[in-house]
Image 1: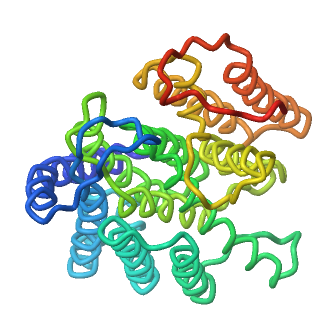
Image 2: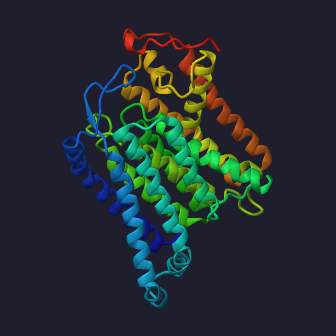
Image 3: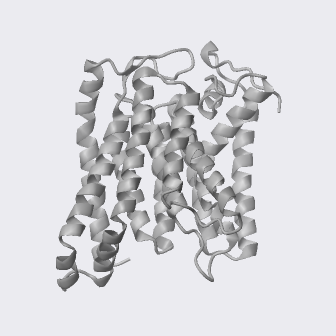
Length: 378
């Protein structure tokens, strides 16, 4: 990475962070004024009514920075190419950006639709079935507009179905993870940071910069969400985070020619492993209990850790650590030999095995009836 590109990324990061940070107080006032509030109940970890709309700051800062600089690149493309004080790499990326304007706008429009679906859920509480249908429609738009992964080992029709399931799955996995102060935003920050490292190592700086912008926009919100929250991101924020993470991993190439093995395709799964682990474990528990998989309960990972007697902040930090260990280990899949990839995958599975043991066999210390869960013996 050149010095100029590094400085540009730093500038983009700081600008996005500042916009997100200064939007939060305004959005908090709007949420309180119009009663867009998340009230506590017996399955939530907060005890006081909390204004939503924090997700609008994440979406707003992310979207505005991308559109602003896309306009700048289009208008000043020739100037950037001609001036010698711009590095060839920076000029090359600026020039390439002008050829993907339609794709970037489609990415932004679909992300805005996902945010609006989440905002509608925050305000009027739409059913999970309707929400998934709307998310699937947006995923169809993405896929049939040319945003398709390189799943060369699958027929095209099957690859499209897998991709739609991935987009809808990650959107809902991040949304379901949002059960405690800073949890979904923190996991998203860690995951996006690790994915950005993979993108830069894999010579995909445009995708890397998208993820850097996502990290900065989420960090601006995170300051007000953890450890003592004054605003929540709501479904608008968590669904938007899931959308960006899922679509960027679709656009990315995780295999470097003559360097990566097919195991590199597992990188996004490992980096986003905690949201997936939470989702599938909750579904499994509900099936064992013969309950509907779409009815909210206290069987999420965060609730299971609280049941063991951990404080909310401690439980959230444990989940952050597992996210970092799993995702950090997965980065090495990018340029490892087949044997090393197998060792890395075993290590990642060991991490999740430790998480399973950690949450299942620690002595129960909770005296709070609120977190007395009835989990199946599996």
